[in-house]
Image (tube, rainbow, N blue to C red; front, side, top):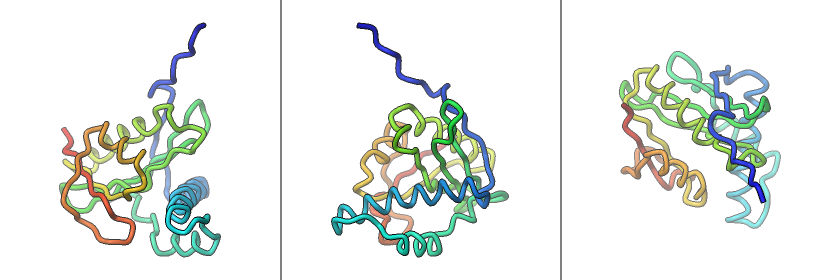
Length: 172
């Protein structure tokens, strides 16, 4: 029996896109529903509500993922919109990774790696020598992705109800 080879990172294109564009806004909402539903299912046995999503979008805006001190990236797989990632400068040396998301139907096809490679290039273009992030304990796939790409756990550098694990990677 012949096997079809798994798609590689070459199947993906990642490019900067305005974070305030309707396409970006819709994908950011999809990201938030995905992570919020996982959180509420784990802690309360239910999905998030529309009101909770609206509140989270208002409390955690993404408008700082734009030039001159940030960037928002959209990933496409086989021509279809499939994911996103954002980056913002924390200081002159460190950029913070935010909003990494690959649509569920596109997971396992190399999109996370493609996004991280593009984020690292963008961070370098912004002058950063290091990328840091925070995530939740239950987002095990994300943590595994980061670890596979050289991110290591570091001391906490942010606070918040969803910051449970902190990771960083030196660039260059």
